[in-house]
Length: 469
Image (tube, rainbow, N blue to C red; front, side, top):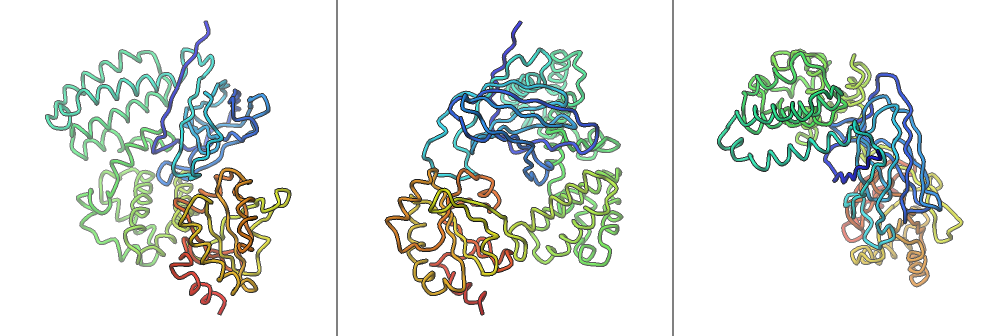
């Protein structure tokens, strides 16, 4: 019998990271995306489920018939995002499996504002012949039952604390999925149900930790484990832990050899009996502190470096490295993300490295953004004054290159370098282009001076003066 599953996965706050241990097995993904011919389809995951750093798994160009094919090695069950332009959908993939899918047609050529942080439409995926034991079917069905249970019983759980409702739900779940011993799915259900125990306050914090964290493996790769982890340990070091919140960690963080001292300090909390869990909680706590205490930022970066190099747990090293990358991204002195883009002539491309030797004023704009055009009018005299000392580059984020080209012809006073982003959404993510216009100043060695930088109406000229004198 032919089995089909129509899966609509809406964007989630979290995705699953690739397992760094175990033996990789090949995965094949084939399918069709009518209407997206010539576009690139990408598979994306996250480096970890605390920083959510994106990692591209693989990509392929959709052919003229709308078909695509990708193959890659996968070490463990992973939650993968399928992306075309800014459109996404998510599903679970397992090592050694073949996935055949059909993406429902959408309008890929709409002329909406291009912004990587606002996804205009979700992809709808039809899995062809997924089989009766397809993990996506189990999880989708379980999530529907879970959501309905929570909708029907939220007040009874949260306000009335009727713990027997949880017992009833567990009995029902066991009946629905009796005989399914797939570890990822079992842990997925277990830790999602743990979230219900948090809502109902069925157990105190320590007993909850005893059931789900103490002497339990850290499931870095399981979506619901890490969702539960993030909820339970948010502000744990500074507010939730009865022991740690009474300790001033500032002198330890700022002192000599802070990493081993912090690990020893956190050991006073019995919830953090397991050292790998303790170190992960330490990382999460430091990640939170970085954004709330500026005087601790430099020593926290140093601690991330230490853990990324010295931790005995491989995944904690990855998390620490991702945290360091996240908090130092676009920071003064860090390398500016590179790019190669077409300019006024479509057969000519320009790279950021081509402009090394001079400071660069970079801005992201669109022809339909009135604020962008107002700032670029003010950029005209700045270009005339500083063009021998500073490179000016404006990256147009209109969907169509032809619009930028036409605009350049009717505005000859914009004589500096104009480039088109050419569907390079990775570049917009790299520079965190959340709004337009966005200005960035880069030094002559290609390092960030300020991001975001002031626009021409907000003091850009003074920043240029400080940079060249």
